[in-house]
Image (cartoon, rainbow, N blue to C red):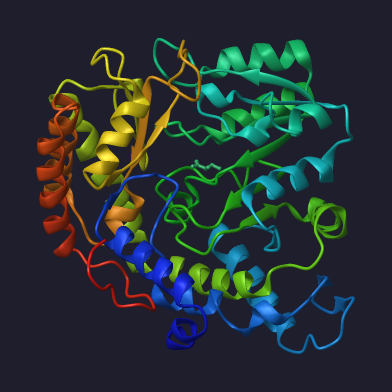
Length: 421
Ligand code: DSN
């Protein structure tokens, strides 16, 4: 397949080859990224990309569904099993669509939703002011306590009592601590709200039983499929039986047309992989690695929001180091260490140039790195931060990073990396 691409479109072939080399020759610390297995990759580039399958198994609007129905039934059955959910919808194209589909299933435009502010670790679709979710719905945002960096459930309850939202959203994209989904469920009950939980970041940790599952405490659970869960890019919804018809209708025909069946086949593979002892060990190691990396960074004098991590990510507060997050992220990228600049709770700088750096361990753990390598990575990050304007130190670090990467292979994909670019 790949040699056909080389023949028909050498430019795109070459760019794929370069990206593979980049991914293999860098320490990838963006906490929402990972490396999928070869099996997941193969399924996602299969002939299912040719097939339209609007509708649901047994009730499609196109013929020729002899095989697609089997794929979707498998994906749904596997999702329900590993998340212990009554119902799963594996059609959402992404986490954003999944979130909007969840709201659309439960409430009407103009109703009030309440989610964590983006600048405190929430997601755009949790009602942030530039997101369409704040145009479609009346949005109230809660924050973390800026002193502790943690969610304050009393404050959230007070805000919910004041604004009486129809939906309370739990879940985050930049929150390093375990979330008490039971508490969110109780707050929602007290104010007569639905509870939608977005576990995009931690779904792999939830499946592995390391973090609390929101499934018993939420009306609808939304997740992406490509972060700690380590599947193809996409979204998924899980819910109680009572909401299953509404959820399905909201995804199709409410928001989407034909599901991406190649992605769903690939997701089915990833869900089977997540149902193994090896995956549980992987998820445990993700957290061990994050805790070790956090500890070492703090020993180097970095401030971490909330003073550490319980999950796969950490948020470095760079104010005491007096280095802008973007400057450090770009210097690290030149040293082949890839993270993302990020606001920290209470940041007085804008999201385009914030005071934080967000990093995490899902991808490095997939390639087999453990605590000893986290010590090295913390040392590299500290060295780059201390020599932020010294390109020869950064270049030297990049060489050491490349050497480390060469000892930890990424899952084999289609193209054997050629020369490093
Ligand atoms: N963009 C994702 C992340 O990086 O966390 C959230 O959608």
